[in-house]
Every structure is written in C-alpha cells, then in structure tokens.
Amino acid sequence: MKIFITGGTGFLGSYFINRAIFVGHKLVCLRRPESQTRIKLDSEPEWVKGSLGDDFSKSMVSCDALVHMAACGVSPQKASKEDLVRINITESYKLIQSAESTGINKFLIIGTFDEYGKSALNFNLIPPVAPLKPTTSYAASKVELFKLLQA
Image (cartoon, rainbow, N blue to C red; front, side, top):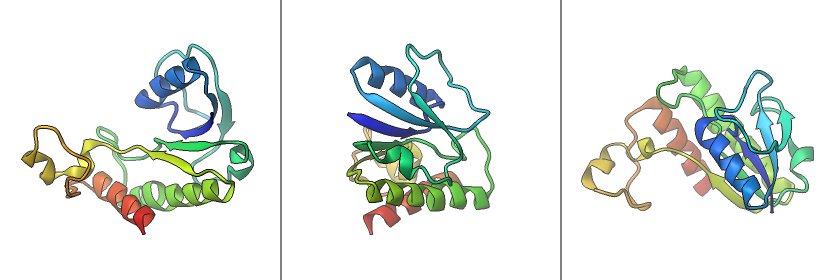
C-alpha cells in the first residue's frame, strides 16, 4: 500500500514511518522545510516539502491511504486560537478533501485522549464511543474537525 502521511517528523510519526516501511508500505511524507524526524529512520520515505495548507494532490494521486497526524497545539506546544482553527480544522479538512478528490478512500486521522476531556474520567479504558467533551482549545479544534468529517 502507498500511504500519504502528515506529521511524520513528530514523535509518533517517526515511529510510524519506521514501522510502515518495515512491513513493506511505500510512503509519501509531508515535511516542513525546517522539520527533522524525532528519531533516526531506518529508511527514508519519499519526502514532500511544504506546509499543511499547500496543494499536495499531485503527490497523492498514486496513494491508497492518508494518515493525518499533523496538528498544532498538542501539549506542551502552545498555539493561538487562530492557528488551531487554521491548521487543525480548515487546512486539515482541505487536505482530506483533496485526498478524496485524488481517489484516496482510506483515512486514519490521529488525535489524542484529550478530545474525550471530562468524559474520560468515567472510564478505566476510554472506549471509542465515549462522548467527546474537550477541555482545551487544542482538543476542541480536533473535535470540530471530527464533527466536520462526520457531516
């Protein structure tokens, strides 16, 4: 499978790249020009440089899936509310729409436990059907993207 990945230079993303290449997937990974992976990669994917809001449809054309891990404001990072809306909602949604228009029909959108917020206190293990009750601006922006995708 050929996968387009955002957030591949982050902590989880770097590990994801290593594992995906190990099991035989071909990867096209978005990277900001100044960004470096958090760990040493065993093998380099095909890197596409740019920002989340850029048009990557040409790079996505031959991909089978999108794994979207890029986000701003994940603790301990700070982000303005404007950046949270622009990156975590608007640009993420446009990227997913672009992927759909190129024929991608498999999506994995990564978030954190934070989207469950206060409802997580009711569970030892948070089930995927737990209500989303975010308590941070970051989590609220991720929940809004989720709602937009559900619609």
